[in-house]
Image (cartoon, rainbow, N blue to C red; front, side, top):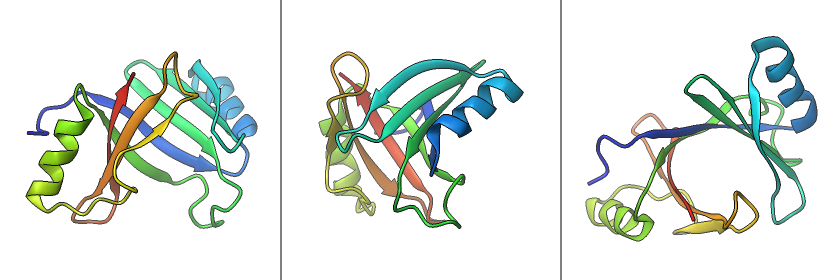
Length: 129
């Protein structure tokens, strides 16, 4: 069951993580809580304001229309394999390549997968390792 999960973060793709994160800290008062590199070397930053956490990642291939738009909503997972199996059995459209991982985030990496909502936005389930 994937109901009633704690919100983890909102994913935001950008062409310039440094400028975007600076604006969020300077203008909105967000605090930098994580500064990482993706496996491809691009920067990923996590910023927090109260209970809202943004994951800002740099993607050079992102279209101008998609840059700066919310890419996904993420919810915490305590058992990513069980959550994935549940979503597959329910017939939800998986929009990632099964369960994926980024070993360079947080202390021991993360594992995640995404499903499509009925309106098309990605819903992510993420387990910090």
